[in-house]
Amino acid sequence: MQFKSEKKLLVTGASGNLGTAIRSLVRCAGIDRNDLDITDAKAVKTYFAHHRFDILIHCAAYTDVAEAEKDHASCYRINVAGTENLVRSFSGDKFVYISTDYVFDGQRGNYSEDDVPNPVNYYALTKLLGEIATRQYPNTLVIRTCFKPDGPWKYPKAFIDQFTSHDYVSERAPDIVRASLTQGLFGLIHIAGTRKSVYELARKNSPQVGKMSLADVPVTLPRDTSLNSSRWNDLKKSIR
Ligand SMILES: NC(=O)c1ccc[n+]([C@@H]2O[C@H](COP(=O)([O-])OP(=O)(O)OC[C@H]3O[C@@H](n4cnc5c(N)ncnc54)[C@H](OP(=O)(O)O)[C@@H]3O)[C@@H](O)[C@H]2O)c1
Image (cartoon, rainbow, N blue to C red):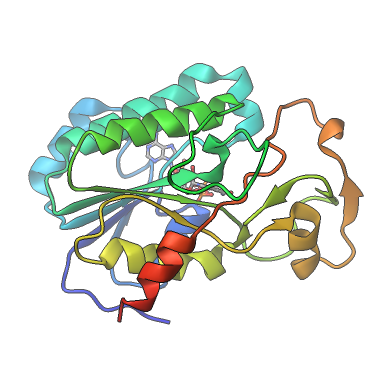
């Protein structure tokens, strides 16, 4: 599927999983750390003084959940200060911030936009702080989503006791582009798939994958962060 837009789009984190998938769907400029380090406030300001975009889809992030527990400073700098740098310097029509299902503690699942976040690890905390930084501005859209890289499951095992509404990134990216291009859509929206165990998701691409439990890993991971995407699913019916 290809999207057409008259708008000038920029994607941060262009070399990442989601950035790559988005760039395959719509004509857009893309930058990663080599082009612009988002933690460098001066460089970000200079960049936007010389480049004008209508829509910014901010995918760049420190995404290693386990490493983030050991290196709070780097995670904070990229996910919070980096996001603040972008939102302060960008002056286009719409700033789209990609957030995560991990903002919830995973006690219950089926979280809607009205539920109260309660992050249980440092990565998730910084993503929530990033949301707050962007939501001070009226032209922002926060998309809470979740996905895994395309291709075979990266690990020999997958959690049987962690539930999620993840799909693979190429299944999720079209709706993220669609929402980003939807005129007048601002605020907060959940865009995810149906609830399933991580093991079920892994088996879709790697039928031989083994089973493991959340109790087997040293980092605290939420048990059920499935998202309720009914608001988006209803809205999508009215979007051409
Ligand atoms: N993957 C998931 O399961 C998941 C779930 C929910 C939400 N999300 C969110 O979705 C977004 C995209 O995730 P992803 O999996 O596509 O990420 P990813 O594959 O880990 O890619 C991260 C991107 O961020 C860039 N980046 C990191 N530090 C940077 C810096 N200081 N300045 C500029 N760019 C920097 C990286 O560039 P370099 O490669 O050059 O360092 C890379 O292009 C993130 O906001 C993430 O929090 C992800």
